[in-house]
Length: 114
Image (cartoon, rainbow, N blue to C red; front, side):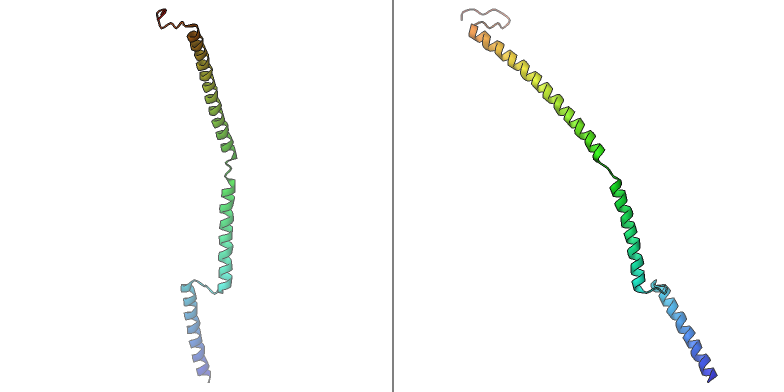
């Protein structure tokens, strides 16, 4: 009976070693699946929080504000240039119309009574 018990204890030890080897190969290391999943979930949540913090750190407001100001200034300069050009053309047009009304247009030489 004692010999039988030693034999069974020996078999039990061998089976436990096999089970431990299988656990190590499968990666469970004695943890149940639920606690392993919870741990992985915590790691993923922490990783997600780090990524979200990095994303929140990007602040484009200052860059956008400067870009908007630059574009606005460029448009204002273009409008001022076009307004100046329009004024010049309007004045020249008035001079031409006045000259036509008076009948005297000078193209480098005086033209009289055609």
